[in-house]
Length: 212
Image (tube, rainbow, N blue to C red):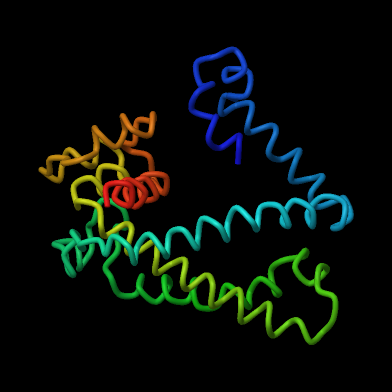
């Protein structure tokens, strides 16, 4: 928690530069970490790591749900855009059949964790826990997807497309950003063309909670 709050204050210091890696360095570090995560016993690395990270994930998730109920954000994105039949700046295909992929990913993730993961089954104490963990994972991931959808659609459409598409593609849309410059300044990152933009979504919710 201390690291999260003090992180922005050390960005330009020697410590901040020491902790900041180039993409080429990360491309080497991550496969090395993945090897040890896969090769070492589950109890030695993955179980302690996941135990600690679960507090962060669950805490942020609960805060996001509470924040959505407190601020009751207005939905800025229209129900259907001009890209409903394809040709959008993020997904080139039409809503159908991409909507099926979206639903399936959120709905069955709790189950395919047991099929595709070599770690989750190893961390179960007994067979009877499978249903709770599988259904629980599916249920929680669906809730996360709904919260993320609310947060994303609370952004101005132009800001959303500017974050989730390349600058070259965004220029062809003929849109003008609304709050993107101030969001970038508050977060301390250039959010244009930063695909995913989850940090922006949380910033929007957090900022509005503070204002309320």
